[in-house]
Length: 234
Image 1: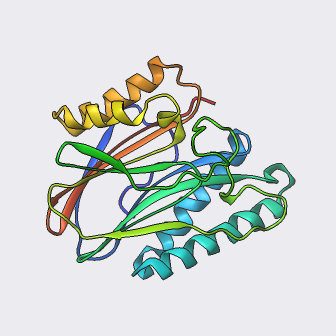
Image 2: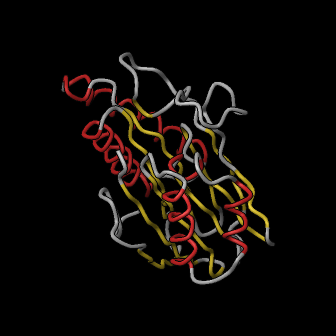
């Protein structure tokens, strides 16, 4: 993050390329707690993690930053009665010159796509992971009336030319299943068309929740591009 932050619905997919000469953070955050509170929580998460991006040099630093942002969101909700209980999920990728880390808290997801197959990397924080459409999540950034510590899900992979990563909110995955996501990613075409196809399928299936989609492609050993779309359906 840095050159591009979006905290409002996009009119069309946007695309940006970047060289990885220092840590670069990509994430989606899906707010909870009513429209105003949810927007505030997701913005605090994005801003808090973006501000810490230069110091995110591994899993321990990512875990520490997420826990600090969790406390920041809780303290902001304590200070404003209208924001009490606000929270957000987050799913992100941290790209460095030599390593890649993914992380999530809540039920926003990350998929890795390579060689025709999409594999989910993130872990859904829901009581029963076989019941994907549960409205309950077991942890988030903020989202409670008393401060609760979180245990983020974090993984590490090599930075590999040709691999792609899809980050998305449950507004997509509640309505479009993993096999359909894999089918779209395998179909080829421009990234903006792929993101638009996923978005359209979610809307055709009901589009009852916020939809955030980000497709990140590693285009060379130390560079990538990302394509993103978002809407607010509250």
